[in-house]
Amino acid sequence: MHLLTIIALAFGLAMDAFAVAIGVGLTLPRLSFRAIFRLSFHFGFFQFLMPILGYLAGLTVQKWLAPFDHWLAFILLFLIGSKMIYESFRNDSSPAKTDPTRGLSLILLSVATSIDALAVGLSMAFISAKIWLAAVIIGIVAAAMTILGMFLGHRLGKLFSRKMEIVGGLILIAIGIKILIEHLSAQST
Image (cartoon, rainbow, N blue to C red):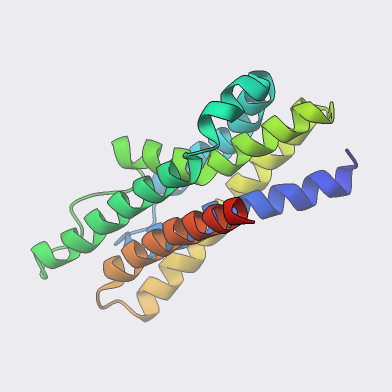
């Protein structure tokens, strides 16, 4: 696989992480180095790890995972987005109680944004591509796009501060719906 193809693939895979990072950046009352590091590290690591797992799994896991991978991504993003929206209505005067860059939310977001990378790893096994180089590039691009998304989201949050947690939650739900529609329409053709 050509280097430019891998880079283009990495940017394509990073778009979900970028969009989710915008949503997270919108919701954080303060954008700290730790929050940026946690989200970008986890998104980059999962985007690095999933193609390798997909590559190693080969056809066995693909047959099992393919029928519902889009549902898994949708459910994870829907639950996290719904929780963010719910939290925004709980107490108007205080900032968000939950930080999506910590705990279970962080892991669920990392998995949800990297499921497509698992499928890419599966397909790379079929063409005998060099998975390690591709995985490193995919991980680095995802981490960088996450950082950019968090800064962009936080900037937008400052400009439009009223109820940005709702917007962040809606973005996550919209990404989940997009993933679901894309996979369902691909299955029907």
